[in-house]
Length: 156
Image (cartoon, rainbow, N blue to C red; front, top):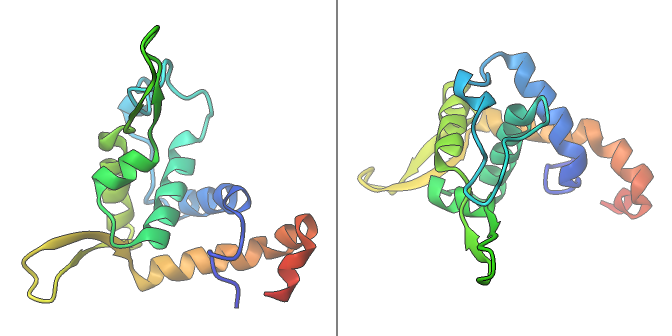
């Protein structure tokens, strides 16, 4: 069976974003039209479905790195900030965007908060079985396209 670890992210993201839109749980807030995705960006995104693609990317990253929190995810979606004549520095992405996306994924039943055995410490968020199933279904659907690009994937 193909898992989401087996296919490239650039093939998985658009199909997963469309699948998330079909569920109806992921919707772009009104403020998302005017917001930058991080302090390192100069302009808001121009892509029409950037919110859905970001939700798909966050879902995949939670699956790959679970349990993971908002702060670590924002660092993954960050970049280097242009400081003029000073050297560039790494800056994190928008935590508000990632937090809102995670809340939408939680309400869709794809992501859940992971705690320690006593249930007292929150370790971060991880995939639910339905989130894992969705990622694997999309990966299985995308697998033929991935094999056309990289024929070596047929071994796996």
